[in-house]
Amino acid sequence: MVVILKENPNKTQLDSLVSWLQAKGIEIHPTVGVHQTILGLVGDTSSIDIDLLNALDIVEDVKRIQEPYKNANRKFHPQDSVIKVGNTAIGGGSLTLIAGPCSVESEDQIISVAKSVKASGATILRGGAFKPRTSPYSFQGLRGEGIRLLKLAKEETGLPIVTEIMDASQLDLFDDVDMIQVGARNMQNFELLKLLGTVDKPILLKRGLSATYEELLMSAEYIMAGGNMNVVLCERGIRTFETYTRNTMDVSAVPVLKKLSHLPVIVDPSHSAGRSALVAPLSCAAVAAGADGLIIEVHNDPEHALCDGPQSLRPEAFESLAKKLQIIHETCWINEEEVG
Image (cartoon, rainbow, N blue to C red; front, side, top):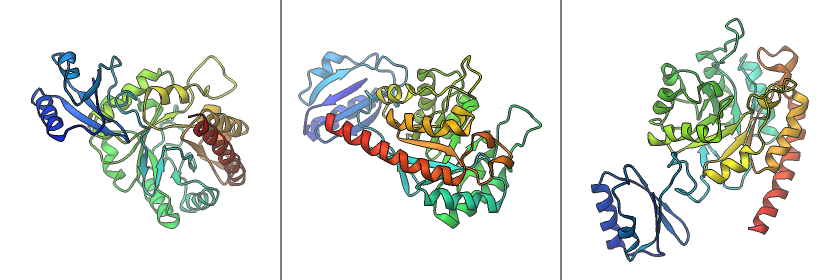
């Protein structure tokens, strides 16, 4: 349920309303806008009389939220959320580029790639330390050593780092990681999501291979219900009947998720395509559709990469793409602002 207040509500009446709701066991999440304040009510609101609330002098309107996700719902939080990651931010009209190798392989590799992507405009460094692989015989990542090398790259470049967690037991290793990624295979690992709800770090939540929009938002709700509101949604391609691409990028996920939720939405064109030649056009499509950012795999020697070399861009290709993406973003954003 959301309670929309009139402009400049009387403080005494507002405090009385909040106390009354809290006495009923309702958790209140206020959203303060320029001209309007919204109280998001979480809990068992079935006993609350809407007519009684509407009769209050300070109340403009009351609405029940029918969707099962509350915290992630745009009705609950009309303004776009901006999620801070280290010294950068995702959302709010900016285009955030997250780039780096699929897997951290060596100190020279990760620092070299970090320097090149930063020079090209990336503001967050990605790199896999723990790698979920279909085959148990494939490279599984450097694990704790991989995180140590990511931290070295962060010290060298100043870029905040994001890397994927596989299991709750690994959380202690992520103390110095700026953003924790939940991969597609763990999108519905609810115990892990509940744990991340207690962590004071932004979470990058990837859509599952066959997940619906609502299932993705419900996974975000698990994290947010625990108190961590810093969630970024990621469309990374879904499984379809097509075999030419690794997955199928669902470009409609961007406008749909942004309509349903206030959370930032980014796109992973590398895993969507599985082919480096398709990364650029898919990236352009994602930005044109309104994505708040992209997470792109960049490797200095894709032919010899230990993981996902065929879908990785070389640094010079990423540099060229980054310039195009900024032009597309600026054009689309300016047009959107004019229309709005």
